[in-house]
Length: 333
Image 1: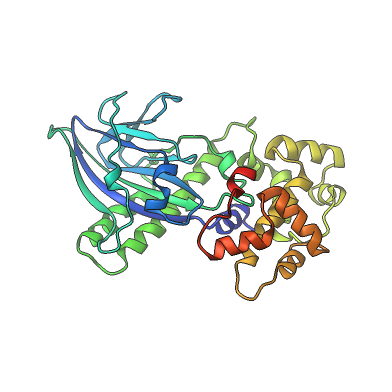
Image 2: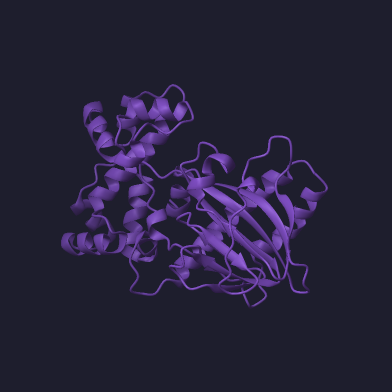
């Protein structure tokens, strides 16, 4: 079981490339917080992550609220804002502007990405693409909390292949309106996100904590693999500890230190995430979904689900099938 792949599938990661921008100095572009544009660019998606890929030239990238220092981004680099924070790209460090809200809509009579010319017409030019990843947050998304507010993946300096090298060809197909180019760009962006995550995991310091650090740890990573491969198994702290070769106390402390959740609490939340996906499938009853992830009674499942999500599973399912988020679930989760 590949835990990262399992989580990405369960949270329904989807990608879209929205803008192909040719900018000339001086220029600045500001992206609003994704909560302001979510319903326009990805209707029905719980959480949206913005990303930018520098195709040529360079620029500065920063969080819009100034909470992090700007960083220089070069051709081939990818910058991702997992929390959906407002962000700024500019030709000069520290520039700001007002976002153009008219740009953010999902076209029904046109193709993505939108091609834009931007800037003051100077000699220094930067080409970059911008897009979004959509994903579920609830019942349980262990990935989002493990990511920093701004994540930059650098193009390899050894000349090895890099996923961003594939974008120019697909963008050229889009200009010619070739069938399927929009879907290829979306899937390519999802592939890029996985590669960015892998590089981030590999770069984590040895003393890091969080879910991604847990994946990298031999013992805790194996425990996560067991949980994800067999969520309905009658796991106990003792059984998991024995399977990964640690004492009960060492395992419990190490898991909580890295993953930021006790093992049994992580298991319970992941079961609810899996059950929520099963409930959305035609013909699957709530009782069946509960049993498939290890709950012995529907009543116990209902209590656990409402405690975590804020609404009963039946209400959740009705809201999801209608394409709307259940009332007050976001506030009570």
